[in-house]
Structure formats: C-alpha cells, structure tokens
Image 1 (tube, rainbow, N blue to C red):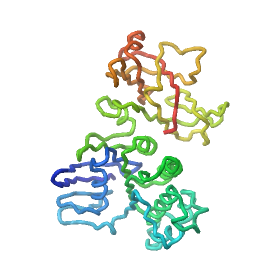
Image 2 (cartoon, helix red, strand yellow):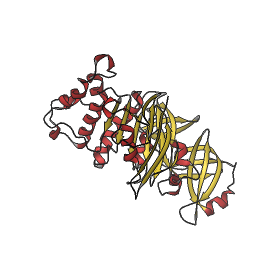
Image 3 (cartoon, helix red, strand yellow):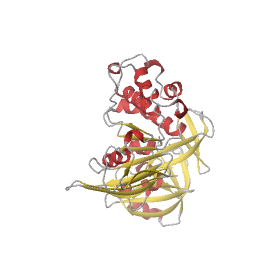
Image 4 (tube, rainbow, N blue to C red):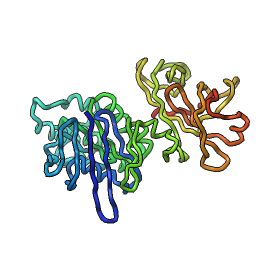
Length: 355
C-alpha cells in the first residue's frame, strides 16, 4: 500500500499545493530549492501542522480526513530534523534507549544491538552528545528515531548543517539503512548529490507546486525536466558487482550485460551498485577505439538530442539496454558523427562515481 496525500497550505504570499501518491517502500526524495515547500509538506505528513481540509492515508489507514485527525504521537513514524537535538544530560546509550523503552515489547521492530551495529555506534555508547562530531550526532539521532520502531521515517535535510567531511561520514550509513531496512523513507533535500546517492523516487517541488515525480533515473534524464539543463547533468545507472578485484585497484561491474570499471569497491559478486555518470564525462564514437586511456566503452543507441547549455553544444540521450545515459558533446562532433535517433554508437566513459 502507498502513502496518499492531498494538502493545500495558504500563507498568503505562499501557497503549497500537493496531491501525491508515494511508494510505501524505498527512499522518496522531496527535492527543490530552499523555500519551495518541502519541509512544510513533511510537517503536514508528520501531523506537526494540522491543515484544514487535508487528506493523508498510509498503508490503508487514514491519518487525516475531514474532522478526523490522528495526532503525531499516535502516528507510527520517526522524524529526523536538521539538528540532532539529542538530550544533553543523557549518554549516547541513554538517548538511544529513550524511545526504545516507550515502545511496547510486542511492537518493537528493531532492537538496540542491531541499530547500534547498523549505524556503527559501538564505540560511542558511553559518550555525551557534546563529545560527538556533527556526523556522529546525526547517526545517534537517526538511531533514536529508528528505535521507536516506526513504520515510516521522515528526514528533513539531515545533512544540511554538516560539513563536507561529516556528510561523507554519514552517507554510507544512510545507504545501509536504505538497503537493509524495509522502512519507507521520505527524505527532504535541496542537494542533488544526496538525492542521487539515496533516492529511489523523486518528487520535484518548485514554489509550492509539484512539478514532476518519478523514478530517480527517469527524473534525472527526462527530456523536459530541469535536471538535464544543468552543468551537473548526469544519470544514475543500476549495476551489479561482477568482481571486487579486477586488478590495478579496480572493480568490475555489469550494467545491462556490459562491463564497467570503477575504483575498487568492496562487496560480493551480484551485489547491487548504483553509479553516477556526468554527461560531460561521456564521449561518443562510431567504433570502439584502440590505444586510448579511456577504459569504459559501452554500446548504446541514440534516443534524441536537445540544445546544450551553450549554442555550440548538444545534450544526447542514449539507450543503454533498458537504462538511459547522457552525453554532452559539441555540435561539430555531432555533425561529424552524423548523429541521428536510432543510431548505434559507443559511449566512452571517462569517470564513474559511486552513486
């Protein structure tokens, strides 16, 4: 069952209108610029903002409709804010156990030991919040939310207040959470890098309006969507790890039956891996090249083209099996290649980043 909602929030100078049906699994990102209405919508879902006339149902259970309203404390959800807001007088262990003790034993989906292991908190349990880094505090806040055994997890820009190093510290733990726990997550962010690494489904919000929603790759590569009209235009490919050690500190993935080399990535054969490839890092050729430093060469088919960021460029959308790859090339290169829809080519991938 999905999460269904319909809210209109009128603040005079700003109006949020959102009618959505969201997947009840995976990570759904509410994405948009600051002030677009993402957090307002999240607060409506949490019940922190009771909006007259709103509607919300989760997995067939109505939380708000007409005069009926389930208060926040009765909704089986966890909420992680931008700031960790840990209890300063309690240790890490005390903060984690705070919510856990308030959940009836028969309703506990998670236990302290497994959440501590999942979030790598073993060495921090005896510390006080003021002895933790920003990333560590957010991991504890996330653990505290999970130990209330929520059926839905809401995260409001949890990395916004962290520096780059702290973000890199916590992102792998969020990926583990996505991959290992069967809790639907609604994740608010205005950082596209976070969305690409974490999200399965994306809702694009601008000035209080839902512009589009869909799967991550479809949203990144959609011809009419704004993501393709940025300098960081990219795609997120779903691949499988073929071998973790392919020599020269490389790992080999398989994407749509073709090999793709990345910097060495530990894991087991068959493990799902998401990779991000920027359009500017993809060249095109009529034949597989020889004697080149570029290691990755993928057979693709041209879907269509559109104007690039400057008049001398084109953005090319390419079919890679059932997925879409983007390439940004010059108009002159497109003319020399005789570029046209349906043409079979080879994509030369310079750089691949884990998504």
